[in-house]
Picture 1: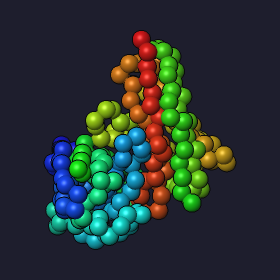
Picture 2: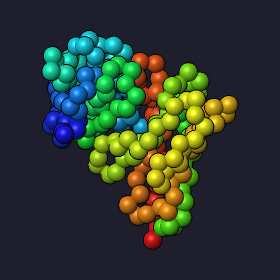
Picture 3: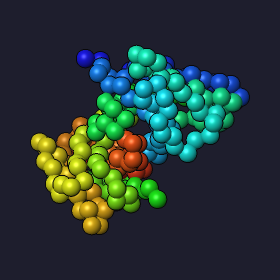
Picture 4: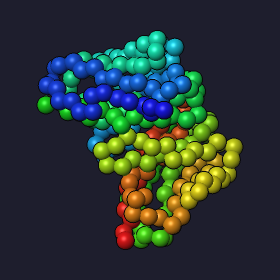
Length: 113
Length: 110
């Protein structure tokens, strides 16, 4: 049983560029949430997707957008990258938008130079 | 508002018990969680407790919840060097969103 998988594992981008990160949820899960973890900090909630719609959003600008596909996988897009967007981006999956257990992927390490 | 606080560091000797503490602010949280993060890795769900419980035990892990003081603790019995990691407390907010603390770095010395 595959857990949550994220791709790519590492990425280097230049300021102003755009990036797309991908997540496949754990088998049987239908809800995907994205978190940003800056170095030395706890993860910060970006948004959650359920039934292909954004259900909840944290305190992140519109440069951060997402999508969920019919097979429940999800993408996180970040436009106009800033140096401060450098972080570990974590995807979590759960069953239902109020699922009790959220399982995390290994994350994508994004470096903006 | 929503806020979760943890002490940043804890150092123990192998074989001792470790106690990691956390305070939270949102009294409407339904579940409280403990996650473990090893260097360069994602988060591993260790255990969680429903907000109407006082205690939950799972092998070497014991979670204590004091709802009145909004205080959560994680006790690891017989701590091993493999337990060295960062431990995050999180509260389950509305709609399944998780609010994390800054993490407690546990160092286990042989």
